[in-house]
Length: 625
Image 1: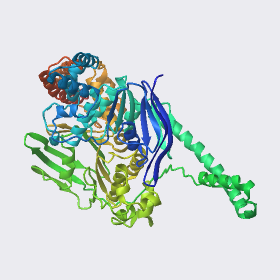
Image 2: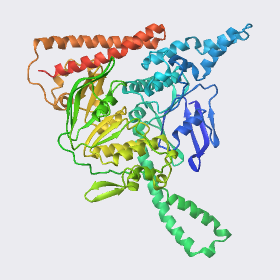
Image 3: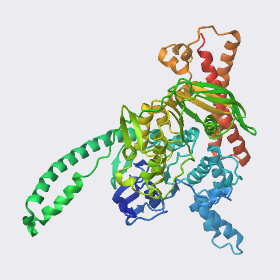
Image 4: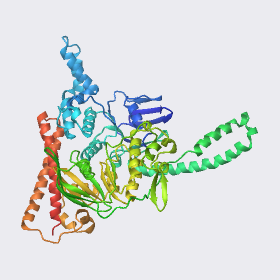
């Protein structure tokens, strides 16, 4: 296997904190590598060093000769006066630099070196660079190529940056949190794209399904060094547990030896001559090993929540629109006690607006939300994190509450609560400005949970949280004795926490699905597959499958009109599937004109929505005897 990247004895510190020391690893051609670490341990710093945006204190990074490298930063930075298509030429890469060289040469009187430039243009396929850019942008549902970046949402800007990276067709692709701010449809598109591609990949992501389905190697950055696991995320979980078990045994052994050596150090100070100095030095190394902490905090916080009555909230025929953009239309729902609801849907379909109307932050155009008197909301929002950066971590939490009531007379102090969410006593004394982005998000989450709400509304709580933080939050929500609404694009997280979904489909349509996200996708995929088993309606009579669709099976017979609709829907679904396949093939061909790309890219989401809508109707009819 050809080595594309070798990291040799890399060391990097920030202030008095060492992020990693003597880091060594390599990535071979064709490998797809996921990098996992806790927030604040240097993941983004490492990727910035590899991407040429930062420098190490010591060590070196060696790339294979003539390697094309594409790097997607966690927070893309572009001049906002650029248009979408201009942004694809703004970050200098080999192809765009060559295009500029060609334009300069053509503008000169002598046109010296033109033939060499033409040969290189042909070799790099630079002639169709703009067309490739528009094709990739269209597959990411960015079709307004002349739109200023200043008018894009955060998710759209991330997609432009992603397209900019993929257009280069790099040999080595480095991605820092590529799924942040992408909706589920885009995450699944990127997952499929990378799975099928031959590109060599190094990626930081906390999306565990993404890691499991795309990566063949996992690197874990921990305790200033790196551990390599030759497998996907499931393999990593198994073998990391084994590594920690061995580490615990080593710490226990070191602790016993430390006690013996400590006794010697105390009893025999007179023996510390030249001959005993080696033993004294070994003692201090042993002390360091014995005090090493294996931070695997398997903690389940069974916190007492404020009493919540039987009346939670009722959405009474709520409608909301912004101009021609319809978000809700005559929406009715009566929320039950202890429900754990997940909200999914493409960006711009009204998910965040829905929860803001529930919380009274946005007024509906018509209808209303009637909230029970005992409901006490805790709201974690995408843009709600506001701290005085000069405060210490512990002071920011104590400003919210000094203690958390666990019930039964038990309490946790603010310091103990922070330790449950992986803020060590030393970190709690840090100033907030020293925290990483993920650590600040975790601190914000703590301030919300400490308010003892009985109804949690969490809007994208998983962005920027590391996997360990996600696991702790999942356990907390599973044990939470109250109501929960979660908006998230993290499929793994949703599957573990929620018991049903609101699927925001756009144009004011919201579907209530009684199951988690994977069950919903499996159901839709079954119905939209060309190989739909004709015996499927009969097979659905088994109770476990029927429960996913409708907890109350219908007893009546299908009417004549419904039989006609059922047969017609089957044909329409087949036609839509064929149209979708044709559009995707055309968009990938690289032979379309700009206008054809725009037209097909606008048609594709329409076809997807029609497929979902007709498939769900087909499913409803299939339940009728």
